[in-house]
Length: 427
Image (spheres, rainbow, N blue to C red):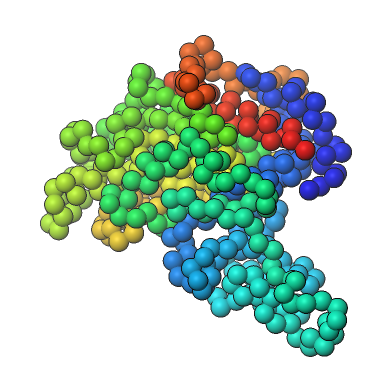
């Protein structure tokens, strides 16, 4: 934990930064606040690091970063998943630079200290220089706490962190529903791309359950698709059944297509015309019910789910954010596929993903431009608040504390900032 961060942040001032209906612009660009966020949020709670499908075999690994700290996510020879600090215990060099692969262990390139897949220090050259100085058993790669739910792998630097299932809380039933888009097949990661934008991580955090922006920012995408799809996607703007909900612990939900909340429940509506050729191809090898289930799942579920602080399960893909600085954030978009499902259906899923979220898609550039304009604009009028008050006049609270309003309202943002303040006020 950084003493510097605590010395520069007055916890009493946090009340002024985050209020029930507004936040201060400094939330987006204060570097001291950013350092405190790393310490009090990203190094204290559960952070999503990988999906189990990325590590199917012993020795499979990926490298990623939590805050500024590089880690290795690896399946060891017993099948256990370990998350290890990517840092040799000798002089601090990273022991793995590959993004992903399969390994029997990890060897530091500086002095050749070598580690097993569970982090155990296996060997160090010319060990006579350490006789009576240190023991190998005392110098493993540092392990993080690991939790897995529905194939989602989370890690935490905090040994005292609450159980993962308690942390996920009210989001768990929605994670379960999200995973049904495999149409009877397991879900697997199917490639990714990443990009950076010049803006604060919380701007993107807000975006996942901000459906109010969709028909404005994504006009170019809607012009590129058929009228039937565009009407279905934007029907939430006037639908009384579409809603946004705070799920506790900073997690939130935005339902834009209520008829696709639970993909096991088929209302019998005609399949979209655009998928008629694919449905005909699938019908050659699959029963009618299976064809309907696969086609209805192509665009994912009818909701976006935000898991505080770094993962969004957004209809048919994972969006992962990594804070780099107060003014820069890295985004990863992970495409999803049916593991063992029909190739032609998985190709269609990928084309849909590329068209909106892909590196040459319509959605991501439009979103990134909006995020960067928020970042630039936040420097103007430092005393003029950022409003998160939409829907306060129609927000209801259930017995379990979950707050619900219309899909276009800012209930999800308020949920996230409530958790932000709670974590930032803790010492």
